[in-house]
Image (tube, rainbow over all chains, first blue to last red):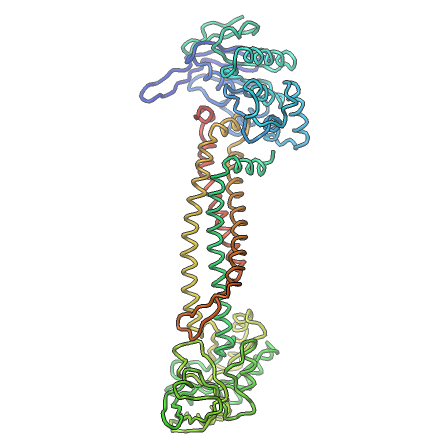
Length: 226
Length: 407
């Protein structure tokens, strides 16, 4: 079943006097439960594509359909609520809130939903355990290693039971061992929960076990496997 | 994580900046609170001085036109015994516990037998004077047992070399314009608290004043002392139609209207208060705006993350508004503590000063003006809110991708 459908997507940015064509006519369909790697060199448009999939950006041309609905028809609040309930984000720089503990960071999306504190705490605790960090629940981000922070971010992305997890270069700030572990964790959670995972990377070594790979070059899909 | 807890942690995250902002609010609040507490004490003192010290009472009744033409045609404006009785009855119907005191003003020459000088006398019955004085100190009090006994302002007494028990002669012009004189005895001396009156003022028994003025049982005005000063305006509003219905054409003045000194001092202090408040608010607003703007800029990426996770724009604004209100709330609480400490210190120090136009020193006392403190805290809260709303709104409206890319 189709989760995302991107048709003829163009996205341009002004960089001073220069106009940058980040995406040039991208067509992409992503089904529920898929695990997709968007890869390519720096500046190929990976982050732009992921921002569109995460409903935090809109194309200049073309249509983004999420669960069959045209994203352009949704108000800012509707898009925001949609992100909260259906999309989880894992960022390259982890983007954990520094004044919150690991557990509180994971609780955040649930509390934004309005879930009562006790229930949010229980569910966040379960997710921290699933990423192997239950012992670090009370630690603030600055007391965690890079790999641990990214696992907290993954737990935070998945705690609401989203349909899609977007991970933009989730391994860029990690060593190779931690990078492998993070990708394996995403793959494992994809298999276990059925959540659709889309991540970007410019490191081809991380693609070995990813079932679907989409290669972007200069804003165009050059190669889509399988 | 509740918004409030998150706000507290974010304030602690930038402890030094938060402390600086909080202290600017606290000192600003304390400055306003201490000044308003001081003026409150001054107003209280001036009120007591006007109502009880100058014997103005709460309301003053006189025949309409008395102020303008009473000197030219005194006989037209004096209140006669039937009118005084009628007025008293009407006042007592509305306020049974009120005092209605007939008064008669006089001016003339006072002599010690060697030198003479002018005087301004106020005729009042000794019993009424006692009631009008209320809780004030009793210096300058007349006695029902001394029908010729007068109270003399200290400055006038010094001018004439008078001590208690000395005799003086009072020379006045009667209501009909003829000269009249009487002997009197100084039975008390008092300080008027007003340099302009200190070498002229006398209190004389009403009966002596009426005799000197040749206006038996008459008065040029009636002073009303109500059970409570707070009733003043309401009483005027209630009494005016009652007098009119009885065919009495009277002018009713409140003590504030009659005490020019009170009005002038209050007007000046109110202006200074507004000036200080404006300065404090400017400093505090700049301080809070700076703190909030920096917090918003520093946390732009965090705002992007929260927005990506599903926090609505209003939620972002709420976060920063909560922080600003926390800062203002804590700042005001610290300011209140500072105020109480400083107030206790000043009041315990027993400092005194001589007010403008005063005749003696008065204690420097600082009270608590709850109304103005609440007003200041409210205005600070509103301005703090505005200081947070604008940068937070701007940040919340920024595209999420831009916020996330912020370095």
